[in-house]
Image (cartoon, rainbow, N blue to C red; front, side, top):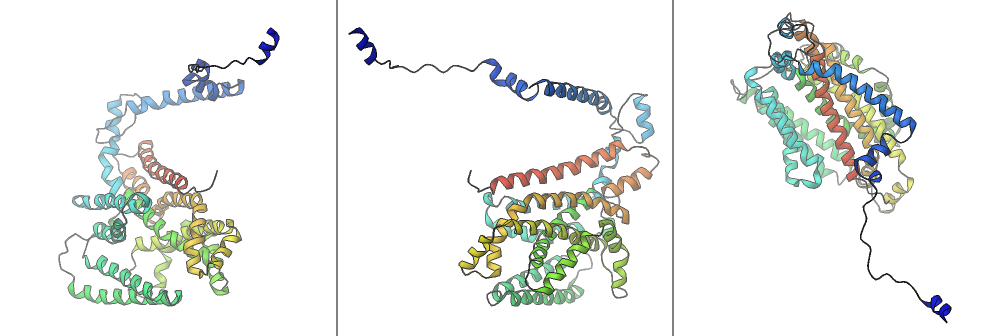
Length: 433
């Protein structure tokens, strides 16, 4: 009887046990150290070796940084103040910061203009980069900003950016009205309308341009420093992306002439070093212009760098197009979409999402390559360091401080681009897991 009762009875817990903390070795900082730094003999040896390397680097770098001189008129004065101790001569940054950022010819009384243009750049790109968090009406300012920034930096009569903007507006309005008939008709109408407005604007400027403009005119030769790098990087990346998309689509076109023009352009540009294109922009391009024609050097450089970057972006986007399954194209056909609609609504959004890492890689490389303009006597930041600053008797011999400062500025911009691309990839990640 007792045995039968033991078989039928069941133990049921009526109260939950309190949660117990995991062992100290399996949680917190101690667990992280053991699992990431000292997980086995090999990892432990690598951790100890890495700590030794970091220690010796800090012992060599920290005295040079902490003992640095920030107020001195020359490198000789820095060495006298250091009295043989290890330390950097950072006074060159406080003495020549304006030349490093704006060049040595840009009027000092007008520094507020490029500074304001840079601040407005952040406002203009915000509705594009963070469209899901910004009101759409801010895109109007993004469209106006390139013309406003041109006027702020170069100065002169405001009629030039106004007429240029009106030309683009007229072209866009006519394109929207004619594209319903055919894409070719819309494109031709847009180009014709913009050309007419710009031609008439040139006549008006000769008549209405004031003798003393609101902002003092600044020559392109007077623009330099990190400001020049930012201008070239921003403008060339912005222009090369749509041009690269057009080249990628043209390379996959069924029209032989369009396809081979794009193929020859892409392969030729990718096979030529950028420095060669810059020499062409500086010297050779002038021979192909009519006598007496003036073609701004910065504009020539922008054209060449944009062409160079667009060829690489075209190949990146072509890879994104090739990665899409054929079912996407068939789905667009089944919906009755024509070629522009299929590309705009179905194909390109997916291809561009796939191509984000490659596009960002090209953009970062392009921004760093803007320093090559120093070889054609344009005083960007590196050109300022190698030229007027190091050539002066006061600062001849200061290298680490100047090039380190340049490296920090370029790193901040490139790292910001990289982090934004990773954030954008996470936002656009719609794959099921």
